[in-house]
Image (cartoon, rainbow, N blue to C red; front, side, top):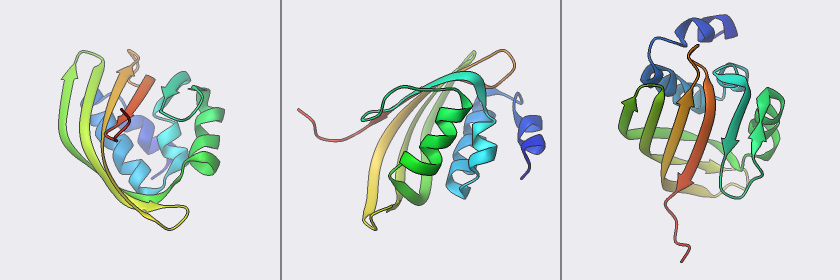
Length: 128
């Protein structure tokens, strides 16, 4: 899918844009998924410094993300205005070859133009 096609899907609704994001990340379409973010977007994820803007997001997905491949299954999606909350499960392979299966929660904030201004991810993992 081209960036142009991705852009045309942005703005159908915030919930649709979030669903498109998971499809693109599972397909490995880094160029496409980065275009869903505003140029000044922030992404917060446990274990990483805050990522800001397209350049840092692209670097993260191409070089730093420990996930090699997999599939996100959205169990629950709640949409309120320009905010979307997701509870889901990820199943896949890490770059070191190990299998990963975990629950996650994502919180997206969208601009009036329909791109992500902020994403924050949480993982269900024993910590304390």
